[in-house]
Structures are given as structure tokens and as C-alpha cells.
Image 1 (cartoon, rainbow, N blue to C red):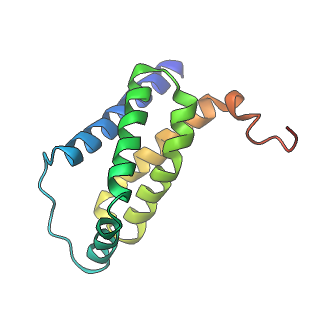
Image 2 (tube, rainbow, N blue to C red):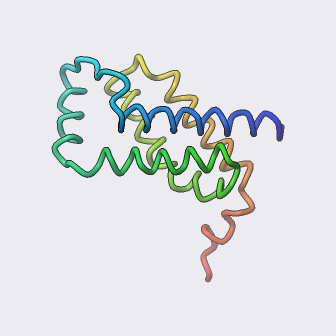
Length: 126
């Protein structure tokens, strides 16, 4: 189980690093969007700060996943991004659903693997 979790952690880290580097350096041309997905993307672009912030967090967490350092923190930071990736692909762009399912499943697996680190976060007393 430990070896499998390490492989999944590195793959998830590589996916986040690739996605963020491709975004910042414009390595992959943006596909032509239409309908609700175009409206959603236009809204993200209109905010100005949101996508660079998300991609910077993905890059930092990807580095943490690959290096194996600060993994419990990286899981917590990237979890809302992973949920959003899943929901976007469920409701707006189902063609990317397999990758979205991998991202959320890998994130949940890593959270489960490091569950002892989260006991203080879900404690009702400080």
C-alpha cells in the first residue's frame, strides 16, 4: 500500500506541476470553448487573480507531492482545487472526467494515508 501511495503521490504531483507550468508558460494552446464552459472560463479570467493563484498553489503542492515533504499540508491546500476540478468536469466538461476522478481519488487516498496528521484539525477542543 505504501508503494502504491507513493506512486500515486508522485503522479499527482507531476500532473499538478505540468498543469501549472503549461499555464504559466502557455505551452499548450487553449481549446476553443463554447456554452457554459466558455462563460465559466470567462468569469475566471475576468477575476484576473484567481487562475494565477490556483496554478501557483498547484505548482507548490505538486513540488511538495513529488519531494514527499509537507504532504499533509499540500493535501489540505489542494483539496478544494481538486473538488472544483471534479465538479467542473461533472457539470461542464465531461470529457475530462477520467483525469478529474484520478485527481480526487488520489487526493482522498493521500488524505487517508496521512489521517493521523489531521486529528487536531477536526478536534472540537483546542
